[in-house]
Image (cartoon, rainbow, N blue to C red):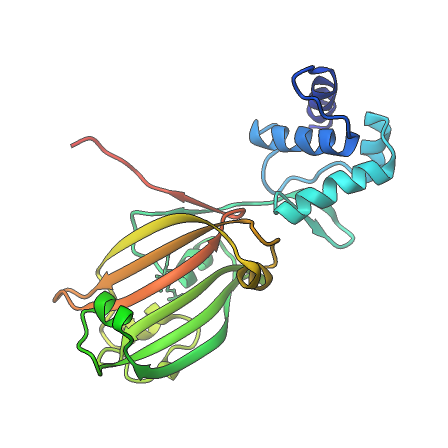
Length: 250
Ligand code: 16G
């Protein structure tokens, strides 16, 4: 891996098309490329700062600067005392109607939520359209930051008819678990995905820099009888999540 990185770094230095005069930006690009070419796998450690500076004949300040930028972008993670690692991405299948809690547990990560809102109120015009509810109906609103192993991964705003979920405090860790207990777990959903740049508030909550890539996902879920059971708007971190779908010919 160290050899692949050294090779890529030298290639970039000698590539007239690169036009990059700054060594730390060349090194950053070289690390990005070897991650993209899978010369180094997610979870693997990057050689130490000292080893990199010796192999590449760069100052430690330059190496540190190159790494710091990639940590900020989320491509690398640093664990205190253990070193620098290639960040592991979370692969989320799009064809299964699962919950955040289930997705994380499946990967051996412990999910956690921080609630900003967990209340009940009268439906807004936009919510009434999304949930097929008449004006004046009551809805439960949840606004949460969702964590995996203490790292913020997504922000979610969910609205659920109070006729289905009468008390917002029935939701502890998982909305779907609460719905399951009420015999109202969604059976089908429609989802829309859009690429977005995270704004200042979202970036702060998700510990990324303003303008980082995010995925905005709207999900409307239905019960067997066709009633809409949730309208959730999520902002997932683009630097961590891969959404994959299996496609088949007719
Ligand atoms: C997922 C769903 C969201 C659902 C939540 C329930 C996507 C894009 N969104 O995040 O619609 O409300 O799971 O999770 O997958 P919970 O049961 O852990 O609260």
